[in-house]
Image 1: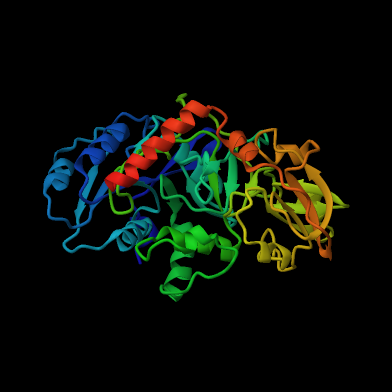
Image 2: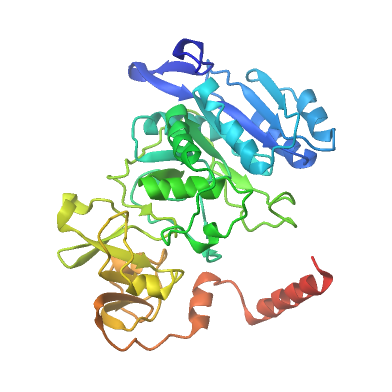
Length: 425
């Protein structure tokens, strides 16, 4: 164990003698030289607060090419020191990321960036402030620099409800720009090392995540957050974006995961919410945490109005991704051990329908918050059987998600996809 006095992290005193965490920057690379060069340029061009000189660590997994190591050796980082770690044996993505996370023991806190990312000019400033805010809140298991605009399970749009703060919470760890304090990473490592080959078969873990390959480290971090009731702190505007370059987990590049980058203002002051203050808390399914308080729906809050035990669990399934038998079987909701009697879903269930809402406002939960009547989202009492409501045409939902697609564009997309399949790409 490295002693506190020998840690390489820096403590900077700012207004009011408040300590600010200043993490090392850890870049993960393997055999993609061009994407690595693009990321490193964005790191060099970023802003670093006066008096802070972070260490840049480039960790390179063993490959048959020297182009990545040559690029890393030649790169000049003018804002601080540079360290290149060249792995002598092929580790694979999962073990490589885990070993990079373990650098929190040496540096106290780190930012982790894989080589297909691009960093916004203010990424470092944001990470310092977010980590400092999250440092002493055990409910925050990691800090994300990436803002999801896409539900990766359903391949549909996602936008967190605005609650007046600069962050929201999601029970899904990020691999597209993330930061950890030593305490946060140690919590995960202790959980992971207790059973590295554990089966991730809980229905609280999305089926998409459970189906990821054994090379994935991320599915374990997501399972850790779910099992321990922790969340990832996410920004309202992304500090990283993902180019989706061809690599270990991608056979072709695409722009699906590109998101707008946050603009830069020197010394920007972020207003963060704690998990119990936030009105935008989401589970691993990208669904708002739900409770029933005095017969009324409350979305996105862990403890609505301080009601505590008076609030009844509500299972939310606006995307319609959960299995129907799990919904009717009263799956626990919001980390609560009690089963969820009430279900809010876009699916048709053979249960008593209490109320139905439209899918017109954005995000979808806004229709519930503002009580917009319709026939798209249904609140059920799963303990009472009944005939399911009539189904709205699926095309209506698709047009809600993909509003700019005309019939002509749909035909062009269809032809493009057919050509892709025929060519084997």
